[in-house]
Structure formats: structure tokens, C-alpha cells
Length: 173
Image (cartoon, rainbow, N blue to C red):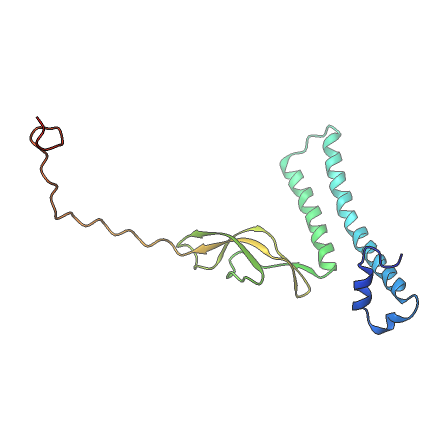
């Protein structure tokens, strides 16, 4: 069945009038499938490299932290390169002013180190595809520090004297 998994009826409603021709929807669905396969094939290379890294630990080799880090950085660079190929780029966050169009505030931290409303920490990267937001960055935003506490004013009133009998209640003996 044509368009299955693509929301065939919805796809037909959104399609240009030329798709009214017999077989046009089938051709469109075929092109979508070819592009989807190309994207997934691209990212399978990243998965292959991660599998190779995992397998290298099973071969009895002792990997030091530096070589593991280097391998992860290599795969991450490859992954970012693949994202760029599809116009996917990260949202700038750290040190930027909070912008609800691109950032999702998870928490606020009072600090005098940076301007209130600035992003202190990025918990999860956000991404754009072209100019469209794919996912907002999850961030911690700087809040103004609490106002300094004023010293407690000296008490001018005196506490009443304690009862003479020591019981705390007057008139008891």
C-alpha cells in the first residue's frame, strides 16, 4: 500500500496538485524512502565505529583512559560531520543570554559571577535543522544572588524577669 507509515492520506492532502496524477504518490513515497535510507546508512557508519570500540575491549587489550577518550572524540567528530551534512547544527548556549526560543531552563542558580539570565550550564545540547529548532538546549540559568542579610538590630526591649519560685508559673508554691 502506498504511503503506509507516511500517513498516506495526510501526505496526499499536503502534496502539490501534480501528485493527483496516477502513481505520483507512489513515486513520492519511493523518493522519501530512498532519502531516509541514505540518511540512516550514513549514521550506520557511526554505529559501526562504536561497535568496533566496544569489541576492542573484549579482546583482552588494556585500553588506557587517554586512548578511550581519543576514540570517543574521533567518533563524535564523525557524528557531528554527518549532522552537518544534513544542516543540523548545535544551538549556542553556554555563556549566552537565555532565549526561550532555543533554550529550556531546567533550573536557576543564584550567582554573582555572571549576569542574571546568562546560561551557566548546558545539560543537553539543543539542535537546529536549518533555521528550525529540532530540540531546545536544556540549561541552568544564572539568577541574581540573594540580597545580603542585614545584621539583626539590637533588641531594645528586655525580657521579663524570671519568677522567683523557679517553676515558671507565678503564684505556685
